[in-house]
Image 1: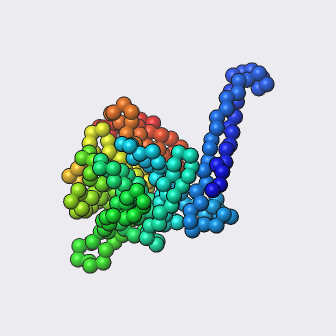
Image 2: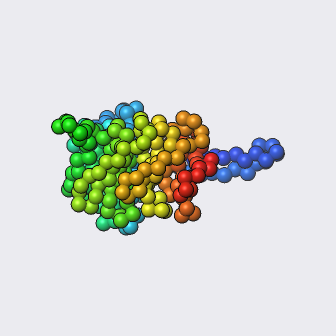
Image 3: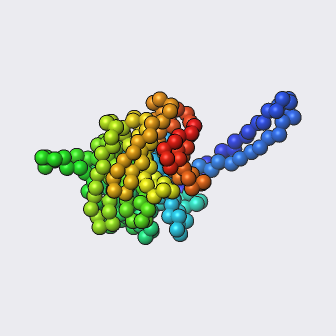
Length: 262
């Protein structure tokens, strides 16, 4: 196995005095290359497709990572040792979330599936989250992207990136879809808020959506135009959600009433 690469970063603090007399702080960044099984050594950096990362916050001591274009997920220990587990061909694994029963769920975006896997990467359950339009027998792939967990710890929520929908998988395995009011919003990531609702970023819609458990949706416009919001997470104050703006080069906070501060 390859040894980890170690990079040392130096930060110079300039406080109106010559650089030679400035204090210097050092930090260490340790990188662990992920040699996805479908890659050659020469192509590791050139064709990387490493996406989400999570761990089981109840009792987990390893990270789980998705390699979307590789059709693999990986389990990585704290010392960088990786094991790789194949997903179905052309399935595009992306989102990851652990439920309250310590089950790991993975969204297979290109296949239109959300699956539950065990510690050995074996698929134990498949949920078809494609959308059947009224009057059509042909399913539409929602492209399930981000995953989140409902307040009950068992309901799995997902963004339908290609169908402008937010979906949820109920504990009995049934699936519901809720269409966003803004056409072409492109929902990306979502997370449960301290109010028990699901909060979602709209990449192209430039809004934050709040989805209640019954599917009712409210949208809140981001003040910065075309900010392209991506990630969203509950704030440590227990009263807000924080999100990143890819094109806005900002982070922002939205409170439970929908007021946004930048």
